[in-house]
Image (tube, rainbow, N blue to C red; front, top):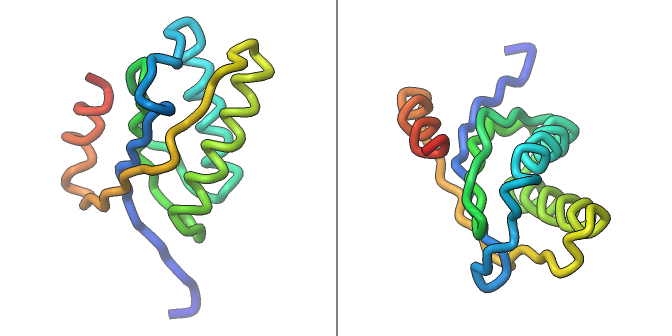
Length: 115
């Protein structure tokens, strides 16, 4: 095969520090647009992103990047961005969950993340 093809779908979940409600609903849509740009700049594709005031769910089609590097970039960049937006006490928790899914599960996982 003369080219490389990667199709890895990952459901990523991470929370705010101590699961405190730090994600203001007023900025949530803008936050996920920002995350979309970070994921894209890392050669991957955000299929859907959503969450609650204390955690985020992302469904990502990974490119040629490892999961810890992508999540680290998302957390670091969004934390700085949110602090510049006036959310000075914003922090993500250190850990995360990353779960591989099959193509046949994309619709169900997307529905779950939307809800």
